[in-house]
Length: 185
Image (cartoon, rainbow, N blue to C red; front, top):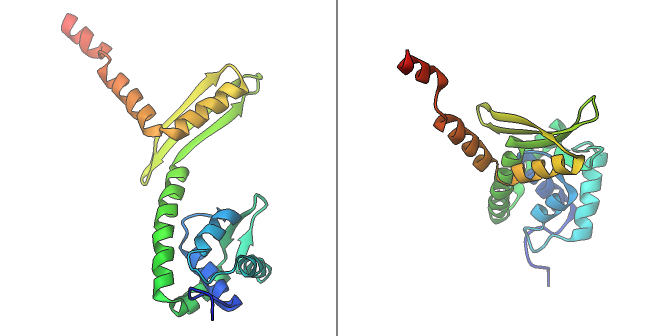
């Protein structure tokens, strides 16, 4: 009796990995790739890790120094050729999982917080929020320590919209000094 699922041999696993990598919105780490590829009951973990390594060796995938995978042009071409060979149900399940991950990857790319060590030895947190059109908000705050700067970055990344709206609300609710002078004059 064959194992459940549609993906059983190494070629099927490679096609699945290339399909995933050609549809993911940004480079991903090994664990995210594994999680996405285990969408079919027939995928064997050990065969999957072997296939990933082979795709890197054959330059279909690129593994960066910080251990993130991305697809190469060669891999993208190979994926396009083989894409329809994957069973429809497997592609559908991958697409559902990719939609969730891609939304998170896009959000992560739009929200940035970084610790800065200034030349004078002080610490700061630079916080930025983007949308599809570009930068919405960048704020640099002096911090008492590296720990505080990192904490500011973490808290900003957890709810950047609230910070943005709070600053905007505060600035819009303040009395306009130019209008005050016009009324007085």
